[in-house]
Amino acid sequence: MRRGATAWAMALALTGCSMAPTYQRPAAPVPAALPQGASYPALQPGDGAVDAIGWHAFFTDARLQRVIAQALAQNRDLRASVANVAAARAQYRVANAARLPAITAVPAVSRFHGTVGSGGYTGGYGDATGGPTADAFGISGGAASFEIDLWGRVRSLSRAALESWLASDEGRKSAETALIAEVAQAWLTIGADADALGIARATLASREATLTIARQREAQGIGTTLETAQAETLVAGARSDTAAYWTALEQAKNALTLLVGASVATGDIPDTLGPDTLGQNDAVLTTLPVGLDSAVLLRRPDVLAAEHQLKAANANIGAARAALFPTISLTGLAGVASASLGGLFDQGGTYNWGMAASATQTLFDGGAKAGNLAAAKARRDAAVAIYEKAVQSAFIDVANALARRGTIDAQLAAQRDNLASAEKAAAITDARYRNGVDTWLAALDAARSAYAARQSLVSVRLARATNMVALYEVLGGGLKP
Image (cartoon, rainbow, N blue to C red; front, side, top):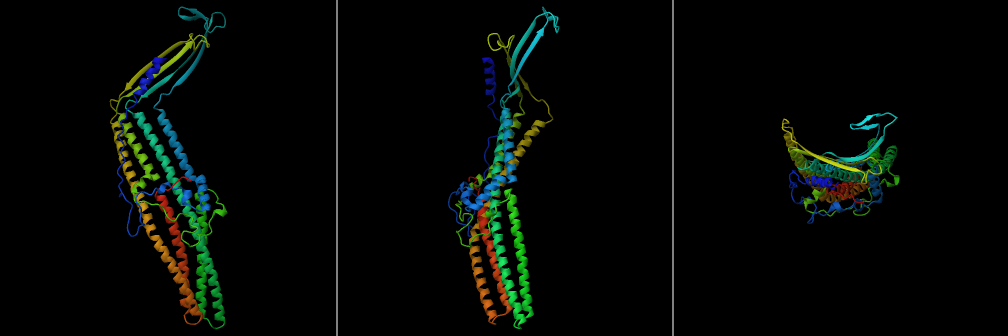
């Protein structure tokens, strides 16, 4: 038994080589620093480690936190990603199992009845009368055609499967980050749509009151039919806007339900984007510790997934190279036999073992194996390009989000000033009209401008909030609670 174990150990010791190229991460095809300039926010040295901030810390509204947690548990696309990770892990276990021999055990028992002669059982075999009865017991085990991984083919395949599993897991993380961002954006959009609908409804009520006054003025001979018609036009426009914003609000709720994968509690659905006071009651953080170093992009889940796929392609080159060399297989058998079951494992048992090795070398295959190697190298080159493209796309994503972040506060301040001026102008024009100083048309134009300014402010506030979500996502996000 000891000699057989020693032989197996020697065989396994020969599996230490690898013909895969030494992996080197490609140089990032992007600038070392993130964009800076007049339209970008000032960044501090380093990378800021935004990806270390948990989503619970970034999304500060308790209702939004509950909705995100529900989506992470219920979203069907995410469930599919988790299942794909489990499948990739199982495939790695299958590939890695080939590095060890498959050991089988075969118990056996037999009984013979007949007359024993010099040539064995010759008389009365199978006859129920006469002759002795003999029993035989045995158990044997071994490995059939275990490949000695002298050239590292099996190990390279195992490594490729491992990297594919890791890539799948990073894909899951990327899907989680994207889902969190999409849920947050949908949730914020509902709040903005609710604000827009509220503005439209208030405007409709105001214009209906104005129409009533216009009709009274016309009936008294003070106003004109034209003024009444213009007031009716404003009412119809407000009714149309109210219906459109109401539709948008309900559709935004439906989109959130689809993302979450289940109905969202009414108490967790926002009815406003919040008061227009910077830094108060915001659903997300208003600042992020973004650094200059673009190396943070290399930690994004989608970039890491592309790199793991590159490593898998690199390992497959080793497997293709090893396939050009002889395949060495080892077959082993060991077992014991006895005439009695009780004596099978003591001195009454007879031990036997055997081992055989064989080597197979392809002499001619029409260039199939060389073609496989060339294909593996080409797939590695494609994986390099895909990885580099992932880094470039990540850089552009961050650059675009930073460009929006660098200008959004100025736009928001300008829109606030615009609204204040428009409302002031509307109030003054309306007063002048009532005092007979200004025309009805001037009052209508001023009212329309104020209404448009209110709706525009909602849109800019939503853009600011969703920009922070986008910046959080493109910098890698944080998946810890």
